Image (cartoon, rainbow, N blue to C red; front, side):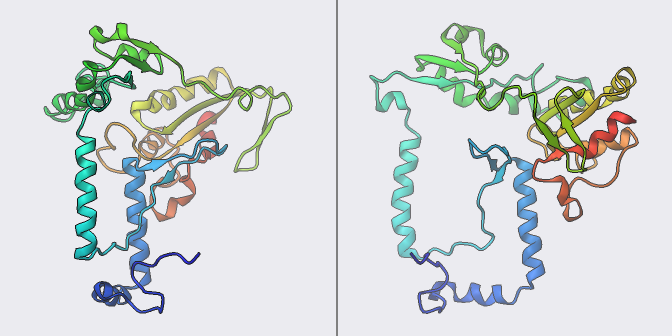
Length: 298
């Protein structure tokens, strides 16, 4: 099957509504387009526009497919698309309970934002930077607040996440842990793991790990890394592995830019180069950050 080409017809000629854009595109240097592609990828990583494929053992996050070449839509195409979009928006604005009043409604309650103690004020070192933070956090609860009244039952993955909910709804919420595949994630006395730097880990080795999607204060990476010198002094044979990306999933980026990982490595005197940009591509893709093992021997 030949894929459909929005810009060119089957005979290789540009479609009429793409001609002006095609002329402009052909005039652009390839390196400029490559830079724009890299900028878009970096932005998507930074704001967390990613996804993971369940079942893949690598667990690496992928970018949401995005094309820097715009899709030019003709008026007839837009007229048809507009009708479908209006229908979809109307459906999305309706409450499920109103569409199917007889159906039982189960809500997944992952987290209820708080103006203090959770996202705001969880660590005095990272206090809110402006007075708007509390109301911005509270506004994120709008979707949950509209659902509490009509839900039949709620589900939270952990007791801690349930504890973030308003007290008046907790008696209608059950905790069911996400769990893991114990057939795959189980002890194996013969297991080994080869680090990118060439070292080999095996069962019985003294290993300390810190694993998060991204290395940031919200995940406690600053506390962990600052404790490593004392840990290594007490456990000199231990090897520390830190797994995580340089982006920010929650909270704010460092005031001076860059990544929190770099900020902390500088603080510990172990900074060896930036974690972002073209010169630091080896740090991306969420690989095991074996280069941070140096922290454990400092």
